[in-house]
Structure formats: structure tokens, C-alpha cells
Length: 168
Image 1 (tube, rainbow, N blue to C red):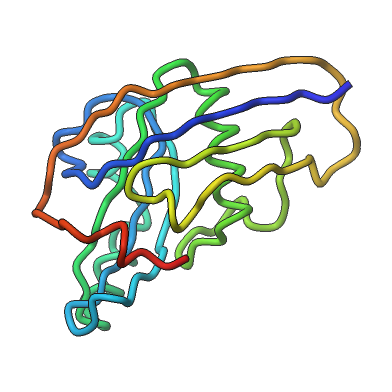
Image 2: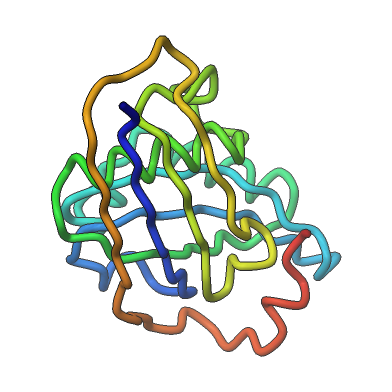
């Protein structure tokens, strides 16, 4: 049997310092010189995104990249408070599928049960909907999860055309 998980993640541009909930975060570098250049730096999960952001071991890499390439760091968050297990699955799927520049783990394979991720909000054009199967040997069990995440956001800055500028 497969472990099947369906996630609907709604991402909003926000200030991580105000995000005291659990979820999946995405860090982009957005060029100050060319509004069409976006670089995916990292994807992760945390029970408390604010605490994770403040102490993140790769935060110096994000800041160095932003400085070197004259970029703003832009954060997107999707709330998942259910459990570490659910956040782990969503994080693992996104890391493997999207291959962010600064991530060090999770890019070599997807090691959970079958999953379908539907990304909505600001990252819909960049991530869309995708399905993954475990890249390891078959996992036994049966589990289905459907989450319709509530919308949460706090604008770091007004970006009226973010969706149109995100890479396809």
C-alpha cells in the first residue's frame, strides 16, 4: 500500500518575525535590478517559523547571496500546524521538487509516501501542482490527509504584481 498525502498550501508574502505559527517557509532572492529575476534560496518547515528564522543556520548564506547579487529577501509562508509529520512530508516534497540553492538536505530523493502538493497564492505560478512517489523502496501503510490552509499574511512590502513576476 502507498501512503498518500494531499496538501493544499496557500503561500503569502510576509514578515517572518510575525509568524509564530507552524508551517512551511520559502525564501527567495528578488533582484533589485531586474524585477523578473527570482532565485529560490531555501525551503523549510518549523513548528514556530519566527523562532526558526531567527536561529536558522543558513540565514547568513541567504544574506550573503542577497548582498552579492543586489537582492531583497522575500519570504513566503504556508501555515500547517497539524504535526511535525505533516510539515516533514510537505517540506521533503518541496525540497526534492524545487531544489533550492542553499538547501543542503532533501534534494537527493523523496523519502516519504506518495504525495500531491497543490500550491496556491503567490507561489502558484512557480510551484503549481505536482505529485511525487517515494524514491526509496515501497512504503507500507495507508494514510490520506487533506488540508485547506487558512490564509494568513502580513505584507513586508506591497508587491502588486508578484504573481506575474514569479518564474514559471
